[in-house]
Image 1: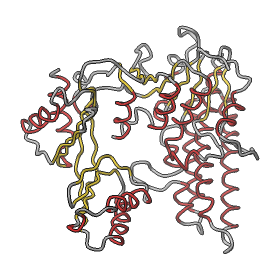
Image 2: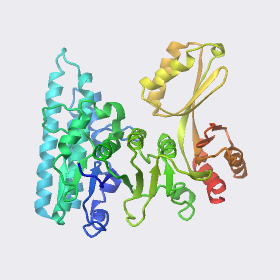
Image 3: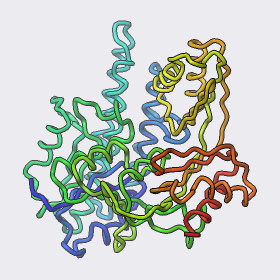
Image 4: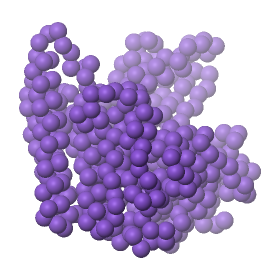
Length: 467
């Protein structure tokens, strides 16, 4: 395949504003024209939440209703609501009546095809010999691919209407009786495309034998994006967001105080991903790092700005690059008999893994192990029961706290733990703990749940603005 191109990813919030991007990001008048790029798109903002479940609240979507109540048709009603919302999206974005009809026909075929599959599966699993659980992951992938195929189709129509030779590249495996591995799926789909003369608009979901959702769940689109960049030998990978990768959230510290990072490395990006910043999925970062491909995080609505480039290694003096945080659950397991006995930590990790709980950080001493996790209460209660089953005498405590992290390089060399504690004390914020590791890439401060934003502001002022 040709080289010298870029592979670029657009998230759901940004692609929902595709009409604004036509004159900027996708413009034929940009330097170099519209070609020499491959765009990987997510579903329009909020659509995947409706198809699967709300990412933040856990409220069920089509998949959630089907998986939890296979005997009723609430899932079909949810599918109708989702389809209506998708029609609203493409009607808003497409100006031409013919394009609206083509998008509507495309969506109708996909939605009714998915509905038929779910009805047939519902009927089949009504017999005792068949189990729905064996097919849930396949259903999840089918529904997820529906949203991204729709957005890719709509964006392709918008570009074609403006004279750009755009081609939709559907990786979702719709009506494809093959079951290829990911490399074959990507190679077959992209073969024959001249990146210098065509603009591929690629679905973020790729159906393959590996099952992307099994390993990455809703982080699959960035993994697809990274694999395409590595496979095609892209000179650069770009993620377009609706904001710049900045030293803190401007809404918290103030627009004039937050500054664009500009240049960093994959080590820092990994820490941000761990904290839910989603600069890039850790697995996608690994693929790009191993392929030697730089990653640029850019503001989709500030096209003239180069954004922040992420490299394998950056020579720079010690500094705090970002202050961010989130509310976590502190899951503490205290057991006096733990001292000198192996296996306690493994049992806790097994319970967390089985319930798909994201571990942000951990700490331990002779008889207490605390994991700071990002999870729904339902999952935490399941973890609690699993630990009690293994260790009946353990005392388990779960409480919400805020974890605020200063991320950068050489942080111990510039005394970030001590300076951070002083800043928190000066702002009247109680410090519940501080964690720092020898590599000095991040320092984590634990504060009361209701002081999250206050702590971010105080730490940013002392560690970034003062510098």
